[in-house]
Length: 199
Image 1 (cartoon, rainbow, N blue to C red):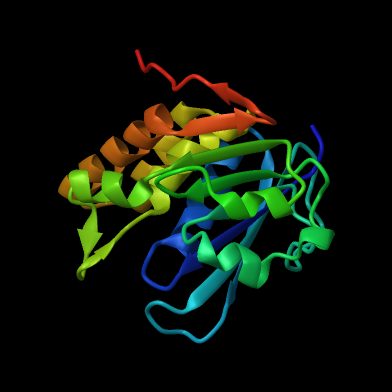
Image 2: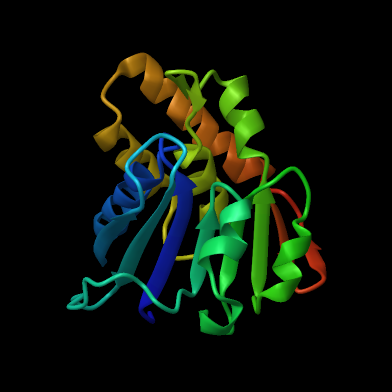
């Protein structure tokens, strides 16, 4: 496989940093090498947080921030135009975005695949809330798994179990993961892909 370079855009409290760790851990469960590299802005709730992840079937030697991602995951779609330069992403970049409907801003960015899901609604439905803030990490991970093809749902479930130790909160995270995996809408160019059916 090629070197997969991923950028996660989130705000403090949404779970973006933990999301990067879960994704990297799931990759290792599949026998891949992975490195999660968080980059904080102002360390406060609601502040922009950018995390980088590299995944490969070869040893990863570079641990700097990803500069030209081939995957962008946005827990807050407004951070895309603020933090991602359209001229500095992979020409076949994928986007996975927390949105109620297809984001118009994506037209400005070269991409081969777009996935969007209402992660906030899913988090609220399963009561995935901490200190009054909806945790979007696991629903966005579920959506991302449908956009890409190198991490399995089973591996991600194990990663969530590794990082979420509270039994009740774990159940909510797993429900959110699967709900978003099923609900995400995917567009390849102008072609919409059907939503998934879980067994």
